[in-house]
Length: 389
Image (spheres, rainbow, N blue to C red):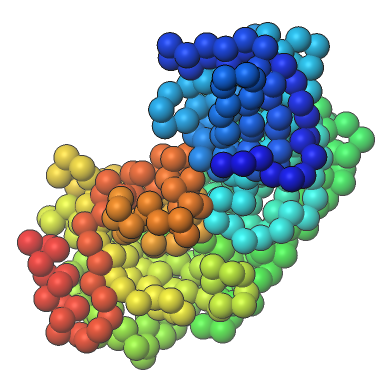
């Protein structure tokens, strides 16, 4: 691919090494979407969207791709500037590929401490439905607000613990600390209010119910009923009166552990809301994802466990991991069910990027059994029975 006509973000001389290939005094030009290497007798262009990861340590930059790692060294006094700009450009590309379709409201520089204790300068970005952490040394981290279990606020430090027990520390925020915390609180308040308003279209709801069913979370029905039996009954009636009433009726008869959630459309508020149900069938090692809303054209069946060991005791933890994985692709189903061959189409480059970088998406694909189209109840039922067998 030819380099873009735009001006490079930075140009440096470096040493290029991959497997048995090594070149010194290579000119590297970084653009917003690609990295171009050249010297007499050697040229190479890397599209940032196809990379697996980029990291920097000990005056070397490691670029990971499908064919292996590329090590860039001997960068000299421009090392820090080059590494910072390359990882920022890569993270911006990944941000676009994370399938969120939402804008950033506020960002501030600081220092990030990962769940593994790794420390790095970073940019913290508050978006519509997630906190995005963009470290200078490795790939971005996205923490959906609905997955946050608790936060701890200290001077110039903000600690976030998610529902899976992972801790992210945002510190050294400086004079922007108050503005950052204020914007974070505002986004949570707005999201809670939007969730409550949407829930009130089903039945009266308070903040506690909105917290439980925050944008993107599928939760055990019994938890909803514990907070508001009236809302649980109203949601049940809504599904009973919907176009998937027969399918919903069948799913209710095969499991007493159904989970329910509400997710807004893939393009934000423009495409409305989707009600999702998850039905575990422990004796069949299966979980059935059903949806009511625009674009909900099929039912999806997953195995609970790759080894066939489905545990009732592990249902809640499985559900949390499922939420986390689905949020990584904004509840898109195409990246899950498309074949490897279909994913190679040019239009699915973002899906391929998400698949390379999202362990959750790879896990969902490994558990995916099949889908049953909503093309008629009897045909749907036979397909579900086939998958259950």
